[in-house]
Length: 280
Image (cartoon, rainbow, N blue to C red; front, side):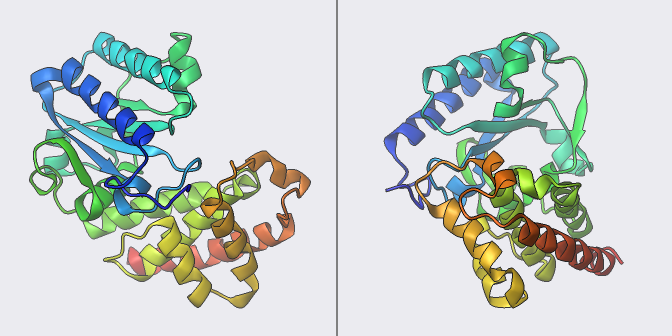
């Protein structure tokens, strides 16, 4: 069975990998650690193996020195390398003070994901620079609404409500990234389902939907001409087969590139209208 799973019924490989990662964070961050929180598909009961990532937000009291950032990232890389069949781990470390004042885009102390593993492995990653990420506001909204505390202080004591306009700006930033150039052809499953998720959230300011919930909503409410594309993405996401995203450019696995581009163009128009309404 490949899912859907939640934190409470996920395979032992997944829970053990999360527990090991949390234990490492607790040891290395020590008394600076406020808490570790699960968000994303495993927190919301829509985790599908082998597609879904493990998404964490980590909150600390004080800035982390560049050398400690490097040590933490390299140790987590070692854990990931030891468990090649485990899901990809993605997390950001945030300052509690930045959450209290809710700066946007939120600054982060460290971001770790499969995208940066090669640079970390080669010791070519810049651990000195301070960075900000506009996507973090949306992640914080998910943690507050549907997240799971894995270690430390309670969720509601750490994550304040995300201001509605900030939340809208954050999810619209994600939509703009998906719609850029022909990115939807490079990652059709992620692209289609996240377009659905953004449009669902824009239609209901209180909604914090999963990819599956958003696709189900889209199949009922978006124009009929796009439903085959949405259904194909949802079926691919739920299947036990790994996603070969690059195959779409060769129209393998039944993907219809022109249909994806039509959906992208329609979503750009719909998203623009929603942006004007949401941020007015």
